[in-house]
Image (tube, rainbow, N blue to C red; front, top):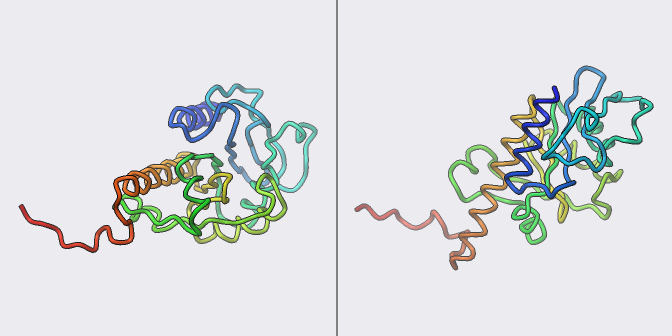
Length: 196
């Protein structure tokens, strides 16, 4: 279990999807959840950084759990997810401040994600607003953005939730690069392909 958390946490950090002490990962097993510790360094997780608690009831170590524990619990209660990855991908966060949804321009992003909804909340970190809104969105989508905060991705395995997070970041970078080149993303793909 620790090795899986370490691999995902290290990959998130190395890919620049989280800063040194941000983001969180969790896994559900029956009526139990294992979630990263509040303020843990995802790039350097140790055994003590994994907090086990109940899906419904708190254990004695609950005060050490991530501030997003209530959001993770709500997602598990209302979706079929067995893993949740929460990250802070900079390009996707930037787009979330401008858009109501992120629509990938690249083929892989379009195929895997189709579109990524952006959820607005007055309080964006571990709030009751997100407990209500995110599970409803994640019933239909693999990943969602919280405006100005970060992404929440779900899967049957942590690797799957990480894949959606990575794909979101990749597609967001492509949108940024396309816009910086002066192209209107809405017109991309509508022009006839030139045959050489």
